[in-house]
Image (cartoon, rainbow over all chains, first blue to last red; front, side):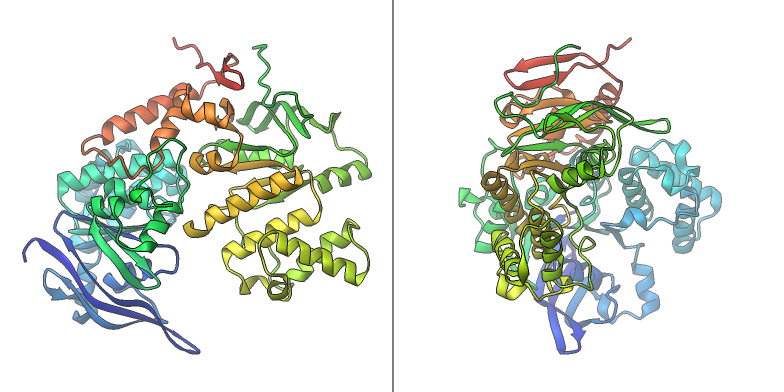
Amino acid sequence: MSDTLLQIRNLEVDYLLDKGAFRAVKNVSFDIGRGEIFGLAGESGCGKSTIAFAITRLAKSPAWIAGGEILLDGRDLLKLPEGEMQKVRWRRVGMVFQSAMNSLNPLMRVEAQFHDVLHRHTGATRAQSRERAEAMFKLVGIPTGRLSDYPHQFSGGMRQRIVIAICLALQPELIIMDEPTTALDVVVQREILEQVIDLQRSHGFSVLFITHDLHLMAQLCHRIGVMLKGELVEVGEVRQVSGAPAHDYTRRLWNAIPQLPGRPELAGGVA
Amino acid sequence: MNLAPNLSLPAVEPVIRLENIERSFGAVQALRGISLSLTPGRALALVGESGCGKTTCARIIARMDRPTSGRLSFRGRDATATGTREEERAYRRDVQMVFQDPFSSLNPVFSIDHHLSRPVLLHRHAEGKAGVAEAVSTLLADVGLDPAVTRQKYPHELSGGQRQRVNIARALAVQPRVLVADEPTSMLDVSIRLGILELLARIKRERSLALFYITHDIATAAHVAEEIVVMFAGQMVEWGDTEAVIADARHPYTQLLLSAVPDGARPFIIGESARFLERAEKVRALSRPTSTAVEQVGKNHFVRALAAQN
């Protein structure tokens, strides 16, 4: 199974509450292939972000992984010692979150933030980091002269691209993108995602793309999983999930987003 | 320049009319020559990217900000300058706002009943305990909430969608003529957005409200509004009947905006990113300079010409 990068097997995540455990992720299993863009759709609270946090083992208490396996290249991440896990995070599995653009350190020049990450994970020198940062800036279309700027000098869309660039600098095999463009307007969203698609093609990494917007997801993912109340209710090729969804909820999700008048209806036109 | 960018046909007298409104913050011209009218029973959507001046425009209409120049008229009378206490009160009663964040716009220590009785009492729309209670129940039922269940609840006991309904009910309690809704659904879950949009459309119809709907999402704008204004960098670039603007977009920025709306039927093409970025950058650069030439391309469809390039 060398072309499967990530296998999630019977994953169960609980949130421990006063009244007992609330199961946020129920027996979820799916695979992400090498070089595949896998989309996870669903509304807030369905457990899709909880899965993202579980993969990187960043789920914080009261979240608790109750069962299952998360295999990266056949190794169960849930069983790795924390020290080993730190080598996986960013190095092999990168993360870009919705508010990622606000996760840049406002007191550090962008260049220094590149160095911070690269030095920690690869032991790069300042000169090496600078070179890598310049290459990454070119890749995401930001003039390299702006590397010495501070985060507040960039627009939201540019900051989000910087986070993606920092993420790519370590050449991870999998990038988890949790609503990476939800806070941005449609034109900027399109600009960023078009770039992600092209970079994915040229670099060959896999993507776990999480969003509530099925239409957006269908534009860039190869396969889509739909979640409802902690369960994965449907997984399939984009064409199948958009053309002939098997689950009623998938159809409802398709129809939940107002479309421009005059566009062909997806999801079999079922209202 | 003399093609007055009049948004509404003069069949119904507009409630609010902006004429050539400018607003500057230091060197930044946030609004440049905004002219539009809000008419009873109709919705006008203001669409544009973050930072284009949409919210500044809403704040001027809601009287939370003053224009640097230009004229604001309210029911046919000039209301640009601060009026008497009585006039200001009347204005605020008639223009109510629904904010983007349903979580921070209700006071966590008061019940829903308190939130709704206060405006009813303050504006003397009901008298006596029973009268107020009845008014509150009617309001809650009007926005699709069960009065018996919701009245005694506190904001934290409601979902985002329910809270936004309470916010709409609170605005309606004042019995306004104009409702300004600034991104009312962007912080809500996908599955409940449509419900809120339909609620806004219904109350607009039933109460002959003029609805000013602000969004960055042109698809939802098309869903609720009869008329649409596309704004970029503080200028109205294209406006008119929603159908005309969407079916026959003339301004390059409107076309860019429409092409970027997610469409599941049209997957991204590998290798396109450089072209799209280049196009977006070019359109932004073209649309930014001030231009005063406006062309009428349909009965109610106007486009701002691009500034001459040298």
